Amino acid sequence: MARFILNRDQQPNGDNEVHNATTGCNWMPAPHNQINLGEYPNCHGAVAAAKAAYGNARINGCAYCCAICHTT
Ligand SMILES: [Zn+2]
Image (cartoon, rainbow, N blue to C red):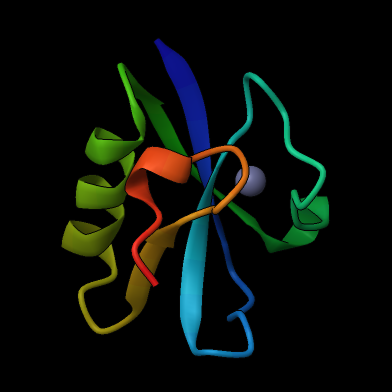
């Protein structure tokens, strides 16, 4: 299991990105911009949970630490 966070800040394209806080990421947002999503086996679960909680936001996986969940 790994812990995932959601970036409170939008990317320039309007996406809010999910990052893996267990492996870490060079693109991790500042602590005050991190929304804890909890622990999941992989980023797919974390992205699904973020979409369920923040359905109006565009949720996407980080291209670096969550590449298998990165779509846009
Ligand atoms: Zn990342």
